[in-house]
Length: 71
Image 1 (spheres, rainbow, N blue to C red):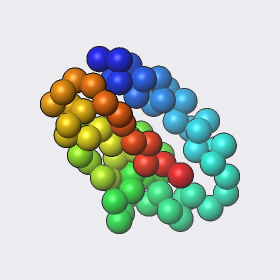
Image 2 (cartoon, rainbow, N blue to C red):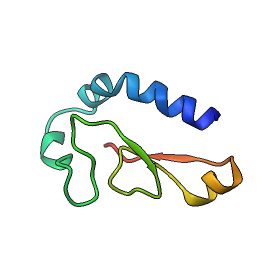
Image 3 (cartoon, rainbow, N blue to C red):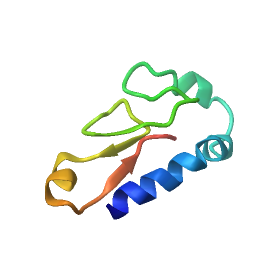
Image 4 (cartoon, helix red, strand yellow):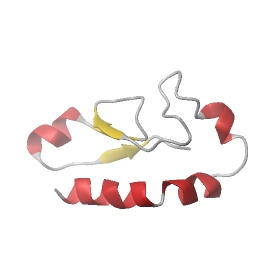
């Protein structure tokens, strides 16, 4: 639950975070090739195409880490 709350907070500031990453990310974050679209924030378990990926073990054990796959 704590991880989900943290991800929800990241989602609220997605546009601000993208702006801070610098120029050129619109070419990288296309929604193709295992990236999320630059304008879309989504998360998922074992989803390499999401902005935030939660590992299967983290979901299973209810603890662990998540990966921010944005630049």
